[in-house]
Image (cartoon, rainbow, N blue to C red; front, side, top):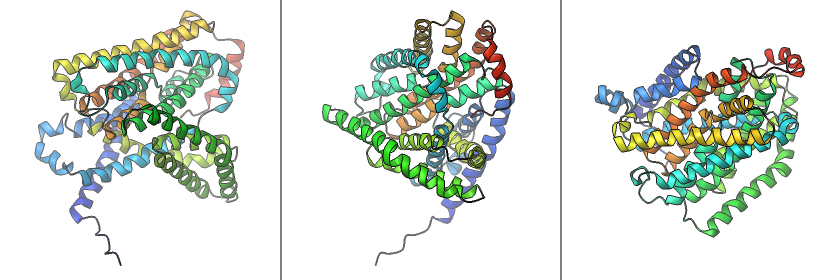
Length: 435
């Protein structure tokens, strides 16, 4: 017989509970403050980690920091586990709220915009990855993998941030708002796929065989998901829907998301890919009453996701920006990220027949990296593809680009006259909540 596994030591459990409670409480408070100031709540949630991490508390009160966040991998892994569950459910929820009807309606127009917004920043990011100082690349990491990862980080967009900005500015009913969301859906889907491939390369030797193997696994996931997976999801949700309560539907959705994440992880791909694909299947199954997802949404957005973002802030070290080479690299990454996205989207929009102001508005919306880029950065740090300095730079890009979106959108859309159809849709969208 195997000896029983020893329980978590009393002190480790105490520290873990204090970490969770403190991070969640402060993340909620600062998230609300950020929202009141017109910023995304995630900015406030990240700020909590920055204050409690090596950027501030470790310098002001090193003893307190060392006690509350000890440099013990086992202790930090407890917090990481909660954060991982949070991000998987967040990505799954993003997939659930994907409006596939938008893709069917605006897909062709959005595709041209999205391609420009993907190819140009991806190329800029890869080129930048080769030019950045070697000090930002972890020892032993293949420069090509690092460059590819920077390309992925530069080309993603953030649906939650875009939707919130459009809702706050009352632009969700506008054609440009709908196009921005649709192109963002395409960007995010491409981003998760690319992230899985680069992550698989990051844990192995980069050869033609590993690339083909990753692509084969990715193709296998897509085939299984939209054949057998669709039937399983639809059947499970049908059974859960027989209950008069929301509990079974929420439990089934969570289980399916986590199991799908485990499946892609087992194939050597990123777990978030499985969570995202499963979320899309749940949202498109047509068997989920939106009201039943409200409790899941509340738990994720108000519970586990803030813990993930606060813990992501714990890994940032803003003091590294005091080093001139790191600061210059950070400014270069930020400039390339903004320029690449705006140029790509603007060119794609102009080629699709949009006016200059419409193209500028689309560029502003899709430039917001927000939540998605933070998830990408965390994956890079976890896999050892990013150093703490590079991770800090990528997260700062996510924050700055998200803060830029609303004011530029407001200026650009003020110069785009609403159509008759848009005015008719305004009352319909005024009461809708956006994820």
